[in-house]
Length: 546
Image 1 (spheres, rainbow, N blue to C red):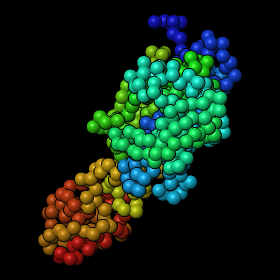
Image 2: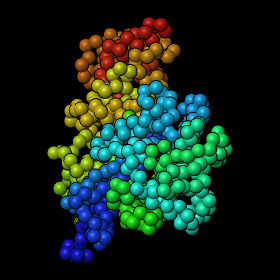
Image 3: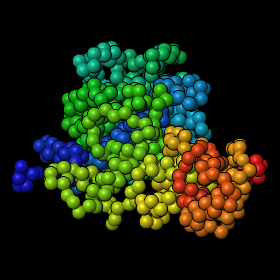
């Protein structure tokens, strides 16, 4: 392929391809491109996890790509906070079971820091988006219904309830909405949502007649209170069912793009049809993505308690690593856990090093794609120079054997000594903090950690008189030792004066300091760990056994 044959769209990534498809489709439909809105739904019924925040990150990536092509764009983060509470997430108090089927904005916050469960969960998701520098316009579903934003769409859908029900049956096989209206009011008597069954719709008055009967939620029967009454569909005390609600907000907000997970593919097909044939608007362009799974292959889900939250990820890794996870590709399922963090941290380092390298890939498409991926990962704010690049597990391994209270200083000195870095820096300090915390939570290098801190209580080590004398001599000499070579020299001088065997001396030192027969080169380790702390530990051990 010659250079002239290569056509690179935008920055050459899948985000640019999707953005170009959105633009070309809208041009063919004759739609204005003065503002191209993209949307992401924010679930509010359980703890946000990597998958749920990924939807918003990817949509923001398409927004950036649209802007790169010269179009103004906006991300709408639409919170589904009028949804009903379906199941108590793992680790939450059991008393929340009393609120199953109630709108999440009317379920108490078990932590007491927000007005409702839905607001609490929404705050966690918004917090993670803020930490990832995702810019968005937040929209509450409950407020959208209350404000009347969706009134026109609600009426159009309910006026076509029979044909919508037939289409739901055609696309999904579900015949429920051939018998009931696709709208669920909140019961005036008990406050439940899903237990209400609409028996008729009075289009002239804009009201539904309903009975609070029963519902099947997560394979469990939830009984209603038996109340019968009416609700106006424009008062914000009810909502469209999922299989046509997306269409209503797409039409009301003029959404041009929204990604979706394969688990809701059927619902998206129904909503696309409703948007076009009932509401008279072309549905948004879509990108379908696979779901994240845990290491056992199960879908990551808040309801089963195997979630990996964005807050957890950002406790142990950079925002760049999480954005890279989402931007590198959209197709294919991926298993994900905290153990994968070093992979993405190191992958970002490699991507950044390649970007700043003078060497370019001869494959122009691949070169553009990799450079584009880096630019999107850093939110198109390319720094003047690359950051600190040290293998994540190397930092974690050093943090594991570092003395308590001296982790950063120890790791920095070791990395400088082995040539991994030239000097301390705020970036390096941050990476040490992430890696040290990660090593603890995943038990990385636990065999190295055992008894590795010179200031911890010394293990009982049997010493013969000559070795005990050598340890005392060595400990006293450490006070004036300032370099690794001086420490090594003091060790051999102590061995010579006491007459003990070198093997006995070094074995005793490593057992006292590290709890094992061998260890790192003694001079650099003791200097990094602190000569005073090491000397005291050796004196304590030798004095008690001599």
